[in-house]
Image (tube, rainbow over all chains, first blue to last red):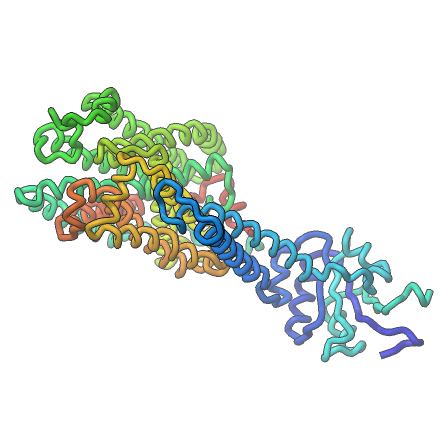
Length: 186
Length: 409
């Protein structure tokens, strides 16, 4: 979709209060859009449900990485104490698992927290250094006073007219089009 | 959430808790008769003392666990818990505490009047034998100091149960009086310090001293984690149950509130696992005979199965069942896990108390073991039923009530 040579990236509806945003998000969700997002200056309670977001996969990443950490710790201690350099301590077996539990616990926590941190950054798409939101200056507004719903142009259901109609129906009076690389045009 | 509806706080007073009262009374009577039979039977009299202690500590852990919960909410000035704090007040009612005191007397009577059958071996003449460790402990472990301490513990718990429950009931008239809340907040801090000491030493006196040579400095914390879990589990079951019966309006206690209860259950499950493993690992590692004997008794002659049952029921199952976010918001799931935790508390107490009798003969389970448990469960249900019949089921007069109603995570 082009408009005077510019690539349409999406459409944003800006709201002044979180309740209108939630109402709009419910409408967009029910209309069946998939590639869309909300931007707010602060966490808005109930927005997850209004957007129909699925639970984040981060929890499973956290548990899985923790398990890997604990397993690695056990394996490491088994190899060190029972295989590579066995030393009899206190008459106990070389592989004395109770003694290895604290380190397994620590590595569980370490792996889980690092994976959660890294996973969070990846899932937040850190590394996307440019976006139409920034280029158009809308980001400055939705991080200070306003609440925005963005419908991406690459959503299979997207077309400009119906998206605009949907946002208007949700009580929006500030609808703007977002373009890729606005700055270059300007 | 908007203040759309005036929530029906008060259900019709008639018949409230009537069924609970009846069941409680029936269990109490049945248990008491069975207890008497077990005591009169010369062969099971010795066993009976231990079983009685198990039943007593089970009920005690629910009552003081709930008392701890109440004080915790006041000291942290929690908003979320105001809608369900009355349920904890129901479980920690002064009447329940009074019945516990009364039902502790048979144990004392057994020790003072019929020392051949007492569970406190160190208390009787010559009971310490020529064990040097026990003689060293004599300044602490002796009859008169034990009695003084027991009176002191009960006096503290009794007073604060009365203080916290009365303070909350006073606000029921609906005046929204802030004064009782402020007074309870001020008292909750000092009480929690006293609570820590009394619970620790009560656990030493009532359970650890059953094997008088043995000692573990972490024992009090271990007992505390179990007590708190039992209290939280009982509160959770009662809250969800009362809500299902309509005695707490469903819109009052929402998933947001349940999540906090579930979070506490989960946190204390982890805490219990941490403490119990710490105790085991340090004793196992140091390998000092007078300490390891405790675990030798609990891993041989069939006791190993009980040890694993404790670990699975108290930590492994509740941990995974409560791990997910959804599980902590689901009343049904929380009740299931809470029942599991209460069963875990019983098995844990069995594991703590019973091997002191005769570890080499293996775990025994008969009606003699269950009779006191039935009786003490009856105490909890009966006092809860009586409380329900007399008082409002939610602390609607608390100044923070409206805020708590609107609580969101």
